[in-house]
Length: 128
Image (cartoon, rainbow, N blue to C red):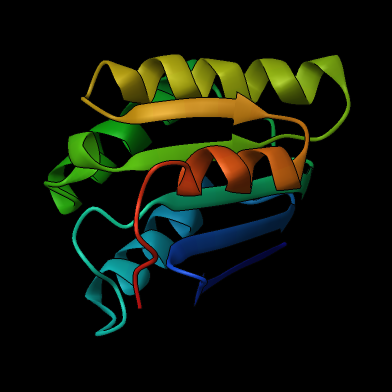
């Protein structure tokens, strides 16, 4: 299991590999939000193409609530999840997206990383 984060080209990027716990993703996001390179309204990319996690809907709901509490600007920035190729992985990403939208996140799910980055950077000046 591996969860890493970085700020690249004005995007807070979190990469997830293996069977991770959603708390690890939330921790990586919290670290990114606290970094001096993070700017309010910076888009967030969660690259879960290598994730093998199978979270419950309850775990996703709890993570969404926690993210909304730790990132009060969640509704003012774009968030993208890039899922693996399998239908199951895409379904988990879609469930996460729909759940997080109830907490005010502006989120989309993609299978293609470049498409997600284009969507995140569409119509905005680059941060950092």
